[in-house]
Every structure is written in structure tokens, then in C-alpha cells.
Image (cartoon, rainbow, N blue to C red; front, side):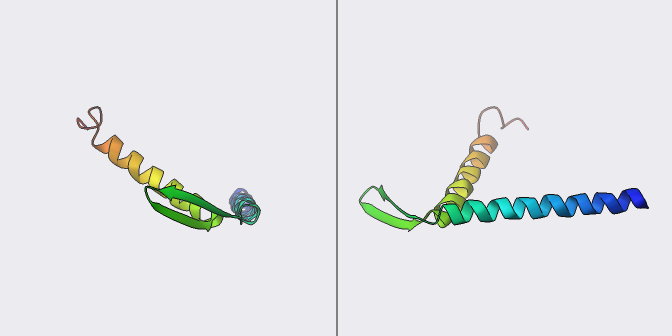
Length: 74
């Protein structure tokens, strides 16, 4: 029973550390960035831009992996 109790505590500490690191990352990247896509100029906070770009990369990677020549046989 004692081993399970310490395991739960370590999971909580890992979660707390990850949340704190994410908060530090968000606070440090609060500047506004501007970028051009074709003829549109988009300005947004890095706090919003980073997760959107990561999400776009995950979606593109998923579809490229799923529909690639090597992934088609699975």
C-alpha cells in the first residue's frame, strides 16, 4: 500500500512541474507576432500561435503518414 501511495505522489509532482513549465513558457512568449500568408497579414500573440502551429503540424503529419505510400499497407 505504501508503494502505491508514493507513486501517486510522484505522479502529482510530475504533473505540477509540467504545468509550471508550461505556464513559464506561456508567460515568456506573450509578445505579438505578425506574419504574412499570401496577401493577408495576421497578428496574434505567441501564446496562441505556438499551439496552433503545433496542432497544424500534428494534423499534417497524421495525414501524410496515413496516406503515404509506406503507410497505405497498414
